[in-house]
Length: 122
Image (cartoon, rainbow, N blue to C red; front, side):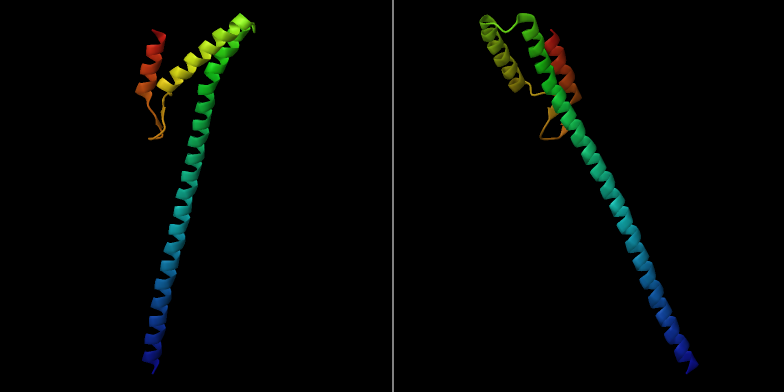
């Protein structure tokens, strides 16, 4: 009879050990996956903030040009038609060359940026 008790106790001990190890592995895997999710969320928020900052920078350049032009030319009636033509040309240029950010791939095309700025300087 004592051998049966020992065999039963050993079986319960093995089952408890296997269950404990499995639960420990599950907790470790969960902690690791949560760490990865937190890192991914932080990276996503940083990239979205960078995208927003780049978008504001792209919008700020034409606005600065308009402010400079208005401060130099003034706000007269003759300036109004010239400003209208300038804004139309700026809008057409933006449609033709939307900038360095390729929206479908979500990454910056450095070569495109260098080529577009080099073409504008000439």
